[in-house]
Every structure is written in structure tokens, then in C-alpha cells.
Length: 101
Image 1 (tube, rainbow, N blue to C red):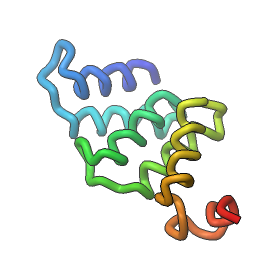
Image 2 (image 1 turned 90 degrees about the vertical axis):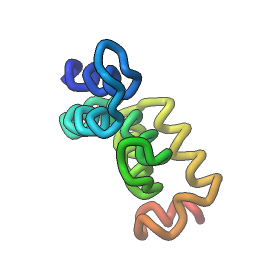
Image 3 (image 1 turned 30 degrees about the vertical axis):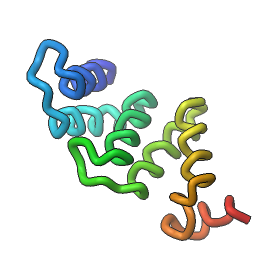
Image 4 (image 1 turned 120 degrees about the vertical axis):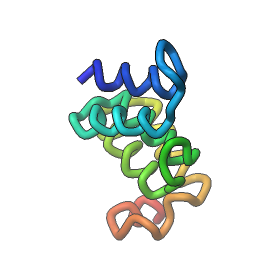
């Protein structure tokens, strides 16, 4: 839902509300779970950087991959960058490991 994504970004940036990255992550996760591609990418960024959530390359990759599969070019870039940077090797199982061959 766009309003969940928008509220998440508002909390992330402090626009109209007090900045709160944990609340941002909560709203972005709700939108991402509903299939919002922009929320999936942004939630990937939060996990990658450890803002509002525990830092996790694995979770970041999972959200980027969901968005990439929907055709989002930013997410596709992030997936490629994670493989290129060695952050996507061996942690996510055989399917993702096949990309490294």
C-alpha cells in the first residue's frame, strides 16, 4: 500500500514526524510484505546499513531480490553489487550460490 511506504519514508527522513528509523522499518516492512517494490528496495537499504533494524546482508539481499524479480532496476543493481562484492556467496543457499558459478 502506498500510504505504508510513504509513512515509512516520512519516519526515515523525519518529514512531518520525528525521525524514527525503527518505525520507518516497521511501516516499510508492511508495505514490502504487500509487494510494494519501492518499500522492498528501501527495506533492503535499511538492513544493509543497519538503520532501524539489525544489520543483515542476508535480509538485505532477500528484499533486493524480491524487488529485482519484479523488474526494479535499482534492486537489480543492488543484487549484482552484492554478488560482485562477495556479500551474496554461500549464505543464501544453493539457488543463489548457482549465480556465482
